[in-house]
Length: 147
Image (cartoon, rainbow, N blue to C red):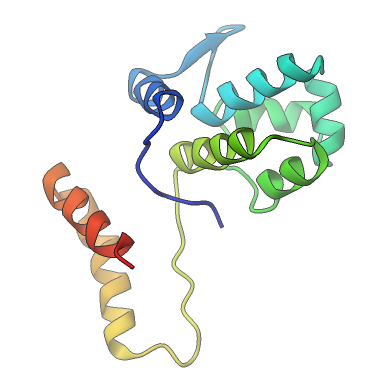
């Protein structure tokens, strides 16, 4: 599961701004923050899209669709790339955060023993999220990130 925290580094802020602005264009297609980070890592490692796709165990076409946001990021894609690309801790964090910024859908997994309160909270988040103000979202995030 990807970390869904707010962007904190300058790179993360730039990726978030690009997501809001529609991402970087490449070949007529806009890259998501995840696509931009993958491209940055590929260039740094002297890889082509086909090379990264092979490492990730997906087709180059599929990886391209993921990078442009036309396909969702598969659950294991980020961990597979991290495990096989010898990334620095910073690159790993940025790739993980960029995946979170690019996601269009999140799931809250409930188990059989989840309490009625847990289920009500998950349902309230799902139905109320779109109506929340940015200030309420920030407050909720701070509350959830407290240790």
